Length: 259
Picture 1 (cartoon, rainbow, N blue to C red):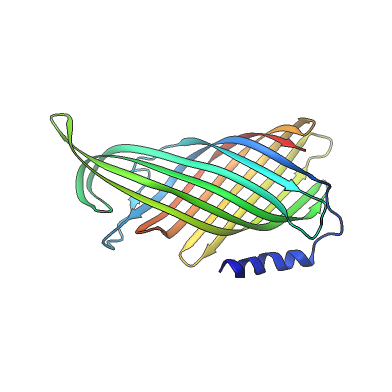
Picture 2: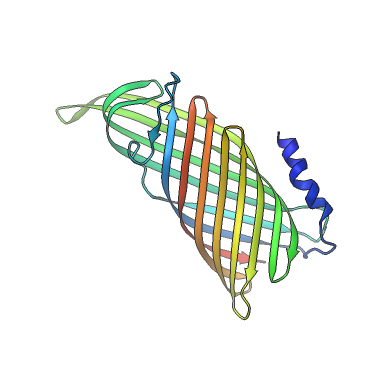
């Protein structure tokens, strides 16, 4: 499937590569984003198709994490430019549940504690199809997501825990996605609007990662930007018996250096 996506994404691009290209340059950025989760997760050994709300049952709340990006561009017009990105997602929650099932835990009533950790690493190959006051890039991203969801039950007696059970669902997956990016420089200002998208949908899986940005450049390529990020992950086979259908949304801010 990845080979087919490569052909589909890159063949039209190769036919429309402009005759010019930028000199060697790039962009580095580091930022923090706040993401509030909404949706469901399932860790089901018995095919009960039960869904667990990440907000109401797992008690995931808004969290803040770091991300890093690097773009590298060159003057060889027929070779794609490269973008690298690393992001981290983490949530934790605790609370009371009733008749709760998760993995090998079935019909539990009491207290639970759980964590979600997800690392995401992107390699993107893209072409600049338009490059002036308005620009447009297109390419293909290969994203690796890996991590785990850990959950433990806590049975209390006389306000003291006396029995623990735990489950850990691990996952490690490569996801190919179409990459699009456009930006517009606002005339007579140091402001720029930008939108960036990675997206794919196939079989029982859908994922997109969209950013909408306003940037201000001070000088020497240094600047700050802020905006809104929306991530949707729906995968019925993320790991063994693990399924997820969750949205992560919230604002972000970053410092950038365009060199």
